[in-house]
Image (tube, rainbow, N blue to C red; front, side):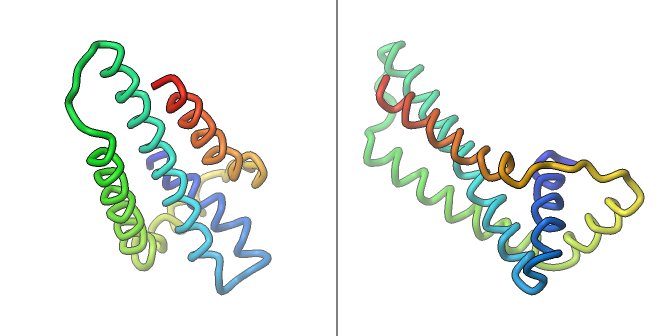
Length: 125
């Protein structure tokens, strides 16, 4: 099981207790935001690396357009992936394993930290 699946299940279980009907939607939005922020961080890292190496591979406008298209793809992929059978299979797998207790505050801090690191790298570029 990937780290994103385990984080999805952790957020899903936390919100299932409080907001039963919206738990899947909140967990899907969380995992999509996390994956997009990691994608942004990697993009900024490679942009900084290529500028240090004096490589002009892509303009900033094209890079932002590519990031937006990739983000739309990530949201669509997660919506399809976690909407039905896969979530039920993940829930069944997690019943047999001892669940890890993640702090919801730290889980929501992960995308914020990735975005802050991306902004710091953007300033360096």
